[in-house]
Amino acid sequence: SMDEADEVEPSWGPLMNREPGRDAHAILQACADHEVDVLFCIGVDPLRDLPDAALARRALANVDHVVVQSLELGSLESYANAFLPAAPFLEKEGHVTTWEGRGQRLKPIRGPHGISLPDWEIFASMALACGGDLGFESLDEIHEEMGALLAPRETEAWKAALDVAAPEVPAGIQLFTYPLLVDEGRLSERSDELKAALETEAFVEIHPEDASAAGIADGALAAITTDAGTATLPARVTAQIAKGTIFVPFNQPGFAANTLLSGEMVARATIAPGPGSADETVAETVGSEA
Image (cartoon, rainbow, N blue to C red):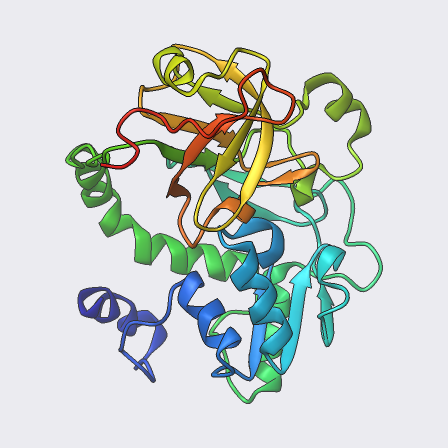
């Protein structure tokens, strides 16, 4: 916003463009429409992390150049034109802030492997290569800048968080998703013992009243359909989920929930007994046509 631009300009200098930029979905759409020349993916894999798998594939196929800055290329290997290896959190000094706003300094247990660098060093080096200067040459200078910029906002941010009203839930069945702690995400790759102990197969949770209306039994397969796609998952019938909603984990083995999404982490859906069920007829939950 313009107010935020006014806050950062004393530290960063005049901004070249004060207009609001694209969000992640709009960036991918612009790439898919051949409006962007270079897509820079920093610690993110659009195919796995963003809630529109089809759009991500079109964007990566249509953009001229893809630069990946991450721990590894993974599923982006066939799309990447350049790879900038970044050091993981165990190999660099840094700072992490949890979703609760709690901050913690990170200390390395070893140095960066190979030619990998901490992200901030990659950013600073690219700025110099492009004839610019980000204004810092050390992590301490970055933290000083962060403190000066963020300290005045902390009280206001907490007040705003407490004043948020509950969102309106649309009528009918509403699919929602989020990642579980142990899943197929980048930071838990090759963690075989951890996954053997804690990772679960994909599933769908549904309220008992919705399950009864749709003819779905606990443990049976359920077919979920949205505008973006279809998936068949074992059902968990539980009163712990709100009536009128179904939950699927975002990225469990063999199932990527973004194949059911069209740009948001929620979607209107229908649910019916899956293949092999006693009643395979399409049975939408109560109110799904509202």
